[in-house]
Length: 357
Image 1 (cartoon, one colour):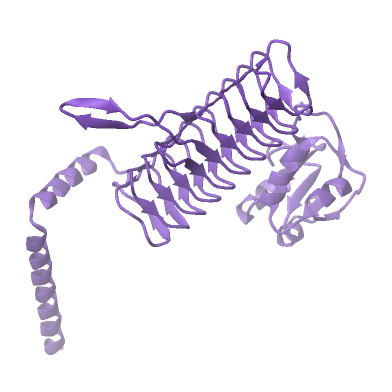
Image 2 (cartoon, one colour; image 1 turned 30 degrees about the vertical axis):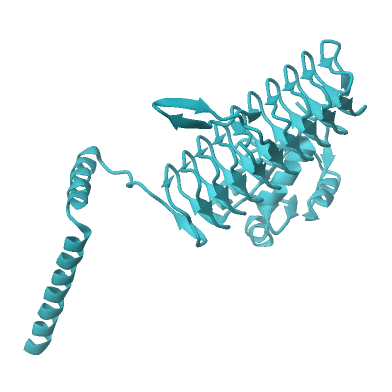
């Protein structure tokens, strides 16, 4: 736990906030409105939390000017910003417990041709292969395996039991969490005469700057071209990214998503939990796909997309499933004719009612 105190006015500078109240108030950390004490800072991220904020014992609050006006008389110490949630996110870095170790642990195995920065940290039982590079201030935790010709940029964090292989290139300020594999062999096979024939994966993986990859993920290297994660991509746990996939800048992918090979996803997209995407399709920029959706075709227009049925009681779902099957058994042309006929009947009835009036 980080026990360093920070003054209210110093914290205000970190987030470019206006502070009100006791400038030299010393704060120990961040906490929720419900759990915060007088030595902690909390944030108010919506009007629905105002009543909770009034009762909070937090030493200071991160608020908008509007919320400050509502909370005066209940609290006296404030950091006023345009976005309390963003300010909270920035301040988590201030109060974070930093890993300050530097140097190489004596159990690490590093090939003589590897270039490791003097300011990097190489943990116990790390293995680094031929012609690898580890940049300044990067942290490589215990039991990481970095295969030949892999490059890791500056200020990266590679957690325990990560494997970096396939001559992948990791940019600057990248975070890769435990048990993830980057650059593993893609799932490529050629079917012939009832057998599967392995295709050697000759490409690599390019992970650009400021990417975050959660634990237990697999980012496969390309068959010929590289698999690419552009700047600012964030990936949750348990995500599979297949060979030759390209993911655009600042796209967010939640847990348990699976992206099949040679698919391109645009910039600023959001994939909610357990989304499945087939291979060889293109998804444009600024697309949001809701949880557990299956994407089987190109998406060329920005927007929010869903598939599947909404949650309902089991008996209602069973009836709906029967109706779906019945719809599938009826040719589309017949359905269109029925709908047209029903529309004609409705219009006829409307005309009759108007005449009677």
